[in-house]
Image (cartoon, rainbow, N blue to C red; front, side, top):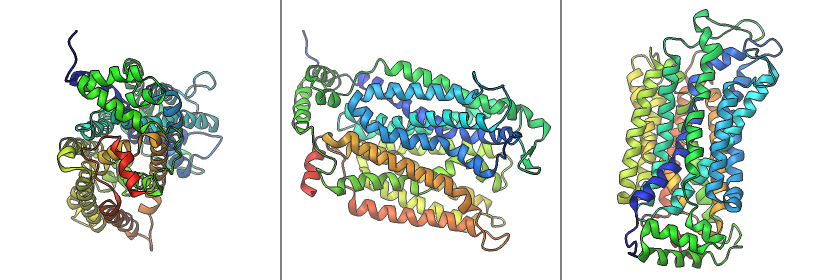
Length: 489
């Protein structure tokens, strides 16, 4: 029998591509609300048993983030107790249930098309279920890829997960645009106690359009759940539960027989102390992981992604959905920059350069938004801001979170870091509209420049944080992290 000396890149890429479908679902689920929220708002504003206020709508638009916090918090326990693969199967199942439930929350218990407070509660429960799936996928997909990928291409492959997230967002922009078709979004006007006066031409969007948008996620969710059943468990998890023979077989198929034995021995060496507590390698290790997650959201990117159509409409764009799609294409392009440079330039240089680019874009928006004749400057600044994020904090944060923690604490540490990410996401997403609409006096633009000025300042602080505290992990194995943090502790 001939030995497998080099391993199979085809096999590696095939299982990674299945895993990154979880990232695509992550992006799809978080961005689907951007096209559906106006029709959803108009639908529930026709309810007669409660007032569907702006506060209700803000909560409904962001309710999935509550599930994200729950899912990411549970990810460490589930990934450690049941394995990375089984946890991803659970995530896909939750995505699928959420898609169908959000499309028709009336199923079994309510009259179809009759908005009421109880239906809104059920709708939000379905969105939270999907959010739990997002939270699980956001933590475990990069962990899975990081644990199967060879160290020399790990950063590139984990960055593919971010590409899939942005691609999922772009796909759903197109899907929403296609579903909307010749129909129009409703112009919602409040007529007493929050009841909506809806332009008749938008009635299809109000009754049906938003349902199709949410339901469309069932297709990629079902595909992901099916395909993930055919990928292997990660070698590092298998070693942690004593299945060394199976781990060696997978390592051999990926890396070749010569490297597989050495990698297995390295894994077993770092897995000897299975009972190590979270702070074994010091508080700095956990702090760096948490702050990478916090800064990824605190720079404000999701406020732009979630509210992109409204922002471009406020700028006076005649086709805000088209501009949003263009921004999605820009995001895809610059995520590819990260994928093809992360192993050459390293993690820290990309993060620092991205922070500086984001700061320039954010300050550009702050000084130009709403100013006569400066709409083009605002649009270019938003594109610079978004593009800079996509080649830096977008993918590189996930790379570092997947690889920066030692083997024995990775599951719990990743869960904590990603939970902080979703908490920060919720804070930023829910605070953006109130901050953006702040006025010191009627008609001024205080909220506009304050919001983006604040994001710009945070970007500068993020660059300093990376420069001073984040270690470079390019070319290091996951087992090297034990030694790295052991020296710092």
